[in-house]
Image (cartoon, rainbow, N blue to C red; front, side, top):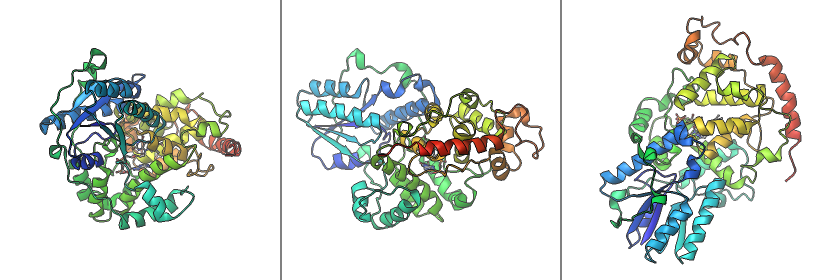
Length: 447
Ligand SMILES: Cc1cc2nc3c(=O)[nH]c(=O)nc-3n(C[C@H](O)[C@H](O)[C@H](O)COP(=O)(O)OP(=O)(O)OC[C@H]3O[C@@H](n4cnc5c(N)ncnc54)[C@H](O)[C@@H]3O)c2cc1C
């Protein structure tokens, strides 16, 4: 028998593991583990944790509706696997998972592999969450060094996808031979009721269909107009694997004018690719000397008390809903790292808790870009002015009115302007940031 463990793939159709299992003769046991490490420090009460829990509940519901059994447990993944393999007394000969590239996930899977080896079973890791197959892409490009910047990667990625499309699979959980065997977990692995007492997430395909039918055509031109234009809103599904990235690509490919949106899917692949090939991806804070920066203004940024209306409006939306449009993520991140001279890991960690769509690799890649660190980064002298950006993308200031109702009566000419007592002077802090980041970039340690 096989054991399949769901992780960041909280759906029941179009998974590479399902294709793999369908080709096996054996039945499989299916398991989802609530990993306390991923819900530590109260994350289960924050937007990012709640999104994860709602999708875990959605997964359980999908299994139930298909009449299939999903086992759920709470505990360290390697210990849960050890328990099941022991309990099954040699009847499990293979454990199947989808690969994940974060440092924690790599360590976690090393521990699982150790356990699986002890039972002389096989540990199979499949790749599911990228559009490209990394080794095949490396062969295709014929480059000895991986791409460092997005533009060059994107060009080859488009060619690769045209030549080797990665179509979605039609296999669903209903097609699999899933064992009906029940497993009695000891109390120590029982899932705390509070973690399951959440509203299961809705399915994503209505959102995808509506976006492709109604809005993708205007994406390229209007995506930054955060108050009047709505992008797909699929990232909170993508982050936990509740929608298949192949299906998104495939459906978009057949839509009208999809290129700019597909380019964003490529961005996502790019950060996953960099996380694998860029040795410092998760350790840049040690590669640069960030000591000229400080956390002095951090709390006021978190609390939406900077006195710069668009920054405070965006942080209010984030705090209240877990959402923030991409353009405003760029503005708030640049404002924190540059104008407020705060180390990027603080902002990154704050987004980790607050974003509904939090994804370690995507979040880090984007924060590094905004902070002008790493290989693919905004030039250090690029410090967006939040006031002029606000005037440009939301001239009437309606977004600010929505999230900062105290300012709702201000005329659109004034609403974007810094409030009295604003945390910094934009011009002076921009100049100071340029000087400091010049110094930080020069401090980069040699490889
Ligand atoms: C500082 C900062 C932090 C971010 N943190 C995250 C994060 O934790 N999780 C996350 O999913 N995205 C993150 N992003 C990227 C981006 O803001 C969101 O993916 C996007 O806003 C999601 O909205 P949407 O689903 O409507 O996307 P759409 O605009 O409809 O795009 C479609 C899909 O493309 C992908 N995508 C779009 N933009 C990006 C991008 N810049 N980088 C990588 N993938 C992208 C997402 O999967 C998205 O769902 C961050 C951006 C910044 C600047």
